[in-house]
Length: 315
Length: 250
Image 1 (tube, rainbow over the protein chains, first blue to last red):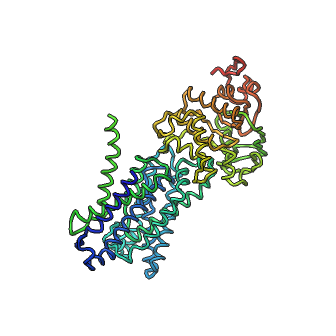
Image 2: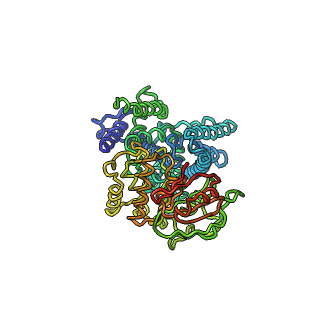
Image 3: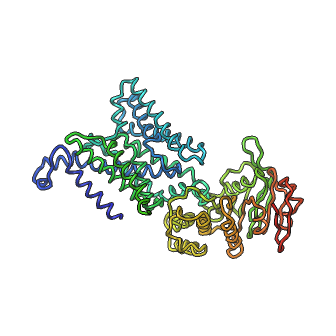
């Protein structure tokens, strides 16, 4: 199973290198310096960016779902993504000349603040009503998103902010995606705390009983979610659903033992986003459809199939 | 030995516990009983460090609750959670394996695996080891959680109303397991119970609480009496003695 996933990821990455408006052929690759340059500057970076984004967002979704003990939430719709956009907007308004690192830091900070706000709200919700959590998350995220849109409208920055509100990869070039490596590093580091997140997912009593510093783990989780989300929003924009659909698919198939499943989650996220990006490049060739739209359809189909397929087997 | 000294607790301005002094010797099953709102669960949560202590002091052996690092305490004291209604998607073996976390912190050794196997065997879970928790019955799931707590290898195990949502077979089986843990594995069990009959049948010692205070401590024969139940619960059930065990006719 794991081997299949790895091979699929490699295969899709290779396909991604050769799909696009400018033609690159495998046969002429080594004799054609133009083609190599295209791979190095555009296709390569784009493929790497897609893989990192898909993997990191899926990990973030899995962690957030453990932290709030609810399977129907993800950072991009529950306020974290909108918080990151808010941070970018604030930097653009008050310090337009700030370097990209400052922009990133501010986006991470506001993302952290809004995700902490979401967690504070969730903890006041009655545990008997699990569906309230995603609903409140959607409303909360939409309110912050509306604030961002309003401020952007007032400051005549609507077009500017759209770049971050709708994520897609067509603008990825060498020199404009490298921050994502930080997101990849944060995602990989959070794997070290996989057991802690899995225990937190079993509730506060179990966590305390097993000697976990509950608050510390929650803060750690929020921090990595915020950094990864902010970096993704700064570099490619908001991509919803990845963090929601992928962890659900993986936990249906392989369970919640994050030490075992997080690598699967990351690779499945990368595969699904990569597939969506390739489909998005081909459907209206030579134009592109944003990856988020394709993923919404692809992810929903895969998820529905998973929900209903076992039932058919059982009959 | 668990020693509680001058413990008081308030939620807002409402006093929940007032000047509790209690000593629980090592070994045996102690049941906390009392009407709703007597402060049983709060007392247990304070011992379990789930709620920070406001005034007073609790020590477990030579560890002071609040001062002792939580991961050190996790090797001495475990809390059995109530059966989680939304079970995590884990296999029985994975769940029991998490009981070893205080020792291996994410890197299980051969010894940890052996302890998990032993726990699975002790609770007759070996045939179910690779089943997912959500495919088990409530009683089996409860047994898996007890196995996890057992694998944690602590001298003290606290349980807050573990019989909620369990039928009579699962309740009796759980209480028998707890008795056995105390008798053959010399664990100390402290348990909050609503049903006095279970307390009378399975506990070595009963602590009766009322309005945030301890009213009486003693053997089931001494505590489960007409007069005391009337005093604590303000209701007048008949108490019978059957084969040396006290029984409340409800």
